[in-house]
Image (cartoon, rainbow, N blue to C red; front, side, top):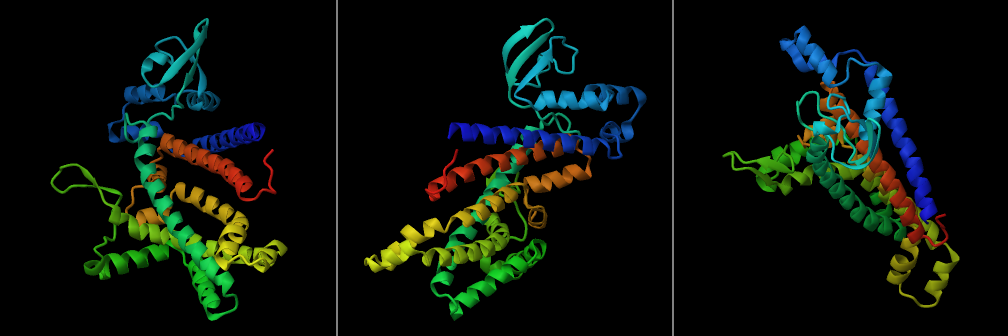
Length: 358
């Protein structure tokens, strides 16, 4: 088990390095000067030089890449000079010193994703922290709705195969899969948030936390979660229904299920204790993939419902050429995918004893 987890973590680190490298060089070959953008109309030669020195824009591309890699690694090397870009006295790093050699110090630190180019002085980790919690609650709610309804409808569809109930559920499933998210967002927001507003009490737009009109702080608004969660849950719900139905039909035809039924076990026990558990592997695969992608931010849904999530934040950063926010967000999302992939493999081993993790 330990060897397997170590191997997966090693692969994950290589994936993260590849993602970081690709995004870094991709953004650095695009036209545009972040230093000029940060100064805007206040630009002059001296200020431009100061900004370029502060953010290492005056160095070669390879040097910039090495410095960024040094910042995001948990174990990094720093020059002892107070004027060095990687100086530990700058207050940028939260670290524990390991040892020093000559003019350099090796430290163990929290990965430093730098500061936003647009929001001067705001750390990228703070921006991700403020937006990701909204995306996490939205993704968790939508997957929860999809999983709960999908398993119930999938089991009913399998038990009543080729009947009207089965065909109706499959029709709903196909309809949900073919419905684009941006179109569903507009229709659901308009119908339930505008047309039926007096009955539902729901708003067309709004985030998880909203600022009080009288300036008394921000307050939790769970009702704003309902419409975007339902919208995001439509497509994974459709996939889960079909996967659960097909997998359960295959399991129900196996010998051990027929034997359990012949021995007098009631139908509920046979289905939910024996058959459904062995039919969940493809469902777990689908749910993990959807959940990870939703954690990356559902851009259309977040924009239409004005949900302050990480997907919306990435698009805003792309429009403003805010490289640290984009790179930090992409690296964070890639880390989530790696972690979820490892967790899913462990769940496979728990669900199906035939799968051995080694």
